[in-house]
Amino acid sequence: MERRSIGEVFRVLRNALAHGNIVYLDQRGEETPGNRVEHLAFLSRYEETPEQREASETYRLVTVGEREFLDFVRSWASWVSMFAVNDDLRVA
Image (cartoon, rainbow, N blue to C red; front, side):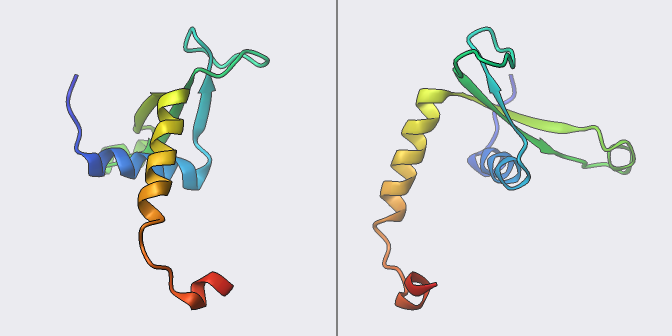
């Protein structure tokens, strides 16, 4: 498996969240209605070459366990909360 930089991973997460490309998977890695979600799959379309852009069928994928993603979101929120917020933004 090829290792990716944190920037590449965040780009996939950002694009998937912005465009609603999130798939909720059960313990077997399948999207089965009614089954408990165990993993989340984030998809981001990625076209690097002219051929890939023409086909529009190249995707990047990040998968993560539900609990691990929740831990990440909590840690991220804690980190973000350490920064001062402009009062003008608070009102907005």
